[in-house]
Image (cartoon, rainbow, N blue to C red; front, side, top):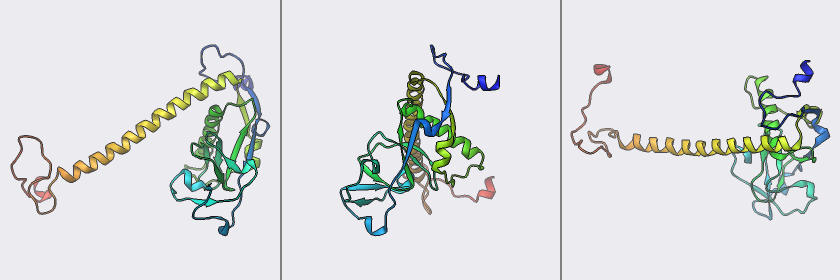
Length: 223
């Protein structure tokens, strides 16, 4: 009974009633390693950027390469990839054609998997991994581990609906995160201008109708 319940999610889109099928991830997806580079192969400029794990997170500096390699060593816009060393997790690459480093997998999907659904499937798997490591992101995921994972997937039509739904949510999250960053910068600017600088009794920016000097006191006298 428990195994049967696992084939039906608690919440579904209207019209979706088929059971989900269990399989090994490696049966429906192929994880392809990038290329390991020697330091003298990484250039300051060149035809292709070399995508490294850090470029997905905090590192905005790039190495380049002029090497022409086999198709499997390139990532194009829209490809699903997975960073597996140090900071790990799935991503949709939205940049130009690049060569990718060994610590990144390009994930090629069979016709049984939708890209946006698979992104969320891998995100859910990442959350489970993190819940077992007290939140540490310093996890090394092996290719064998990924390929041997048991996953339960619906038919491709239901995958499309799920993938589109979460893509919309991710878009909203990104928009609100950008707005949050702007608001924090705006607040910081107002804090600088609406409080007097050291030695001054007048802030740079005030509301209409206020012109009196601010009074200096010891904080312990009034709190």
